Length: 193
Length: 443
Image (cartoon, rainbow over all chains, first blue to last red; front, side, top):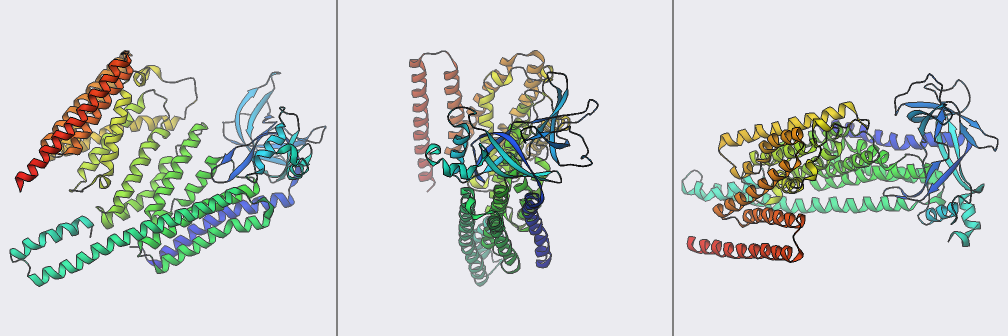
């Protein structure tokens, strides 16, 4: 039979791991949000619900693949490092993915899918964005979804701002037509009802 | 000492006294001691059950409050709030470990609360920072953080929560096309707790509850974790699994009364009936075996071999335990329900080699019919109404399923249903009267 002290010591260790996992996510996210560089990504949202974490706006990024060098070989599900670049409209796009982080400049650490050639024969890798959900108040999430689709598909432009630090990205805000979602919902209360 | 052993001891006391092994005073002392402890243990059990349910309700309530999403509170506040239930229940569990570890109610209740608090903390942090990915990623982290608790806190309730989270994760991940090979190694975290419980009271209610949880988990997990590269291998895996459950339950049995205390046999037999009924159709037997190995999709190499390992290992293990039962000349009834193992061992390769699915379907129809009739026979011989009814359910479902399957008109189908129903009622009526008559004669 295990002694009381030993059991308490082991339990304390387990409890610390539990705190570290939950708290670590807080620290990582806060660091990225406070000190990370901000980018805007185009998105296409829909509204589902999660049994534990409530309602959210599911986010599909308009870009979900990155170019790769001709000689790069990758096994699926490996980590890749993808530099972030800015397009002419000021939105973020993905640079050339590699197995090592770039020497300078902001980048994201992403999970790779398969490598395929596109229509012009250039190789690209499918990537899964780690931020795929924007959690919202249970009443607001469905309205946000309707706001973005607005009855006519793709009528309004949706985007998210993401703060990036050391390859980790954390969503900061969801925008509809360049207006933060909560502000947009307040201003368009009648339309989003 | 277990509940059943106490009951046995108390029932032996008059004989012991009569034979002069112990005197009346000693018998009275034993009766007082164990009689009280038995009554005490059942009231303690009730308290434990209420403690667990209370903790479940409170914990689930916290999770629902979290799910509402209190956006206007701001990030900092929500981060602080997310850690609060976790810290509070951790301190609570720490206090229980120090002061109340002997009490099942305190232990199980506090452990349940902590298990749900972990979920609430993870959920709220994910929600606040829009991180954490899909549901399966959440369930995976939750299950891993729960894994040491069943053993450390000696908690059966957490085993159930842990296995449920793990199964849910595996199902969700499988739907997404991810690999769930880690399911089994992680699930093995419950083994130390199982040993704990079996050592302290292997015939007790806690051991029964634990076996229910594990039996149900294994049923689902086996299906979820199969890679299905070789079509139809699941048939062999499940036939082996259910036979192993039935035989293991029978081997370990010592006059346990009631269905609840025989989870392995109950799950094994129920699972067998469902499985055999499915296999009595042509469809599951179509295009099975090595000639139809799937090549178009990508498969996980190790997981594919685990499939083969299970398909060979489970039936072999079942056969080993069956041999043990045969040797002891015991539990003929349970052996009857394991006939599927030798049958499928012959039929599966034949169907795979010849691509004639009707062989499998016909074999399983005959098996269902034969075992059903034999079960009715056993029930009549042992005068057990429950056994007779089990056999009748098997035969009746078989008849009903085949009638639906066939091209008969509604009139014939309707008549068949009515006949089966009358058969049920008449058998039960006659048998219960005969049973009552025997009881009267015995008096």
